[in-house]
Image 1 (tube, rainbow, N blue to C red):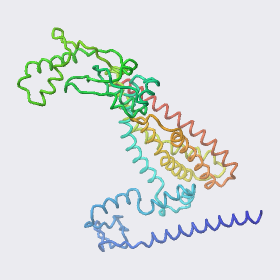
Image 2 (image 1 turned 180 degrees about the vertical axis):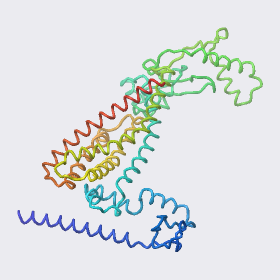
Image 3 (image 1 turned 30 degrees about the horizontal axis):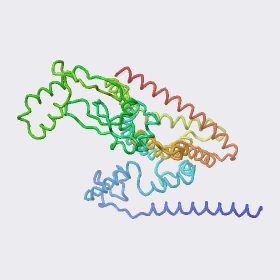
Image 4 (image 1 turned 180 degrees about the horizontal axis):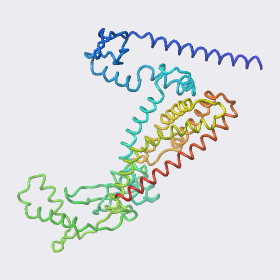
Length: 432
C-alpha cells in the first residue's frame, strides 16, 4: 500500500517537472522568434535599431507596407498582448488553478498575458454583447409580463391541436398573445390564430381565433379620442376617393371601408378587445424605466466589478494575514479568479437572456441546473484549488477558509449590487 502511494506521488512529481520543462521550452521559443525590423534606424528618432523596439523612444518597428489584417493583429498584440501567449494563458488558467498567480508573483510576467489586461478585455467584450442582447430581451419580457396568463387547461388544448379559429374580432395587440403562447412552448400558434392588418394608420387588427382563448385572455377596451379621430379621417378619405385609388390602395381601402363605423359619431360600432393588462402609456413608461436602468447598468457594472477586485484582494489578505504576503500578490490572485468567473458565467448569462425570448419558456430541469448551479460549483472548486496552490495550507484549512471567504464576499458583493440597482430604479422612476 505504501509502495503504491509512493509511486503515485512520483508520477505527479514527474508530471510537474515535465510541465515546467515544456513551459521553459515555450519561453525559449518565444524569445528566439525570428522577427526583424524592416529598416535599420528608428523612423521616429533615427536611433539604430537592435530589435523590434527602439531602445531610445520605444517606438515599434512597424512595416508600413504590410496588409490590413497585420495592423489589426498588431493592435491586439500591443493593446492586450494577444499573441500566441493567450492560448497558453487560458489553458493554464483553467487546468492549473493558482499556477499563473505564482508565476506572476515570481516575476515571470512576459511569458503570459498580463492578468489585468486579460480581465479588462474579457469584461469589455462580455458586457458590450450582454447589454446589447439584454435590451431586446427585456422588451420582450415586459410584453409577456403585461399579457394575461394563459390557463393551463387552454395550453393543453393548444398542444393537443383540439382548438380551431372560429371567432373573428378586432383587437389592439393580438401579436402579444401569440408571443406569450410561443413563450409557453406552443408550436402551432400561427395555424390557430390568424392576424390581418386593416390599414397602415389603423391601430388594431382583425383577428380570427378560438372562442376559448377570447373568453379567457381578452377583455373589452376602447380607442382613445385621437385614435378614433384618425380612424374616422382615414375612413372618410377612402370613402370619397375610392374611384381614383390604384390597385394597392384599393385593397387597403376595401379593408378600411369594411369596418363597422357609425358615420354619425365616428365610433367603431363593433366590440374592441385587448389581451394586455397594462395600458399603452404604462407600457411605454415601463419600457422607458427599463431602458434607463439598462443604460445605467451598462455604464456602472464594469466600474462595480473593478471596485470588487481590490475588495476581493483585501479580503484575501485578511484571511491569509499569517502569510505576510504583499497586497499586490493577493490582487493578482483576485484578478485571475474574477477572470475565470466571467468566463464561467458567460454561457449562463446568455442562457438566462434566451429564456426571455419567444418560444423559450419550456426548458428542461437539467439545463436549468447546468446553467444556474454548475458555474457556481465550478467557481468554488476553482477558488478552493487556487487558494491551496497559492497559499500552501492543508486541504482542511483551505476548505474552511475558502467557504468562509466565499460567504463573506458574496454577502458584501450582493448587498452592494442590490443597493446599486435600487438606486438606479428609483432614479429612473423619478426621471420618467
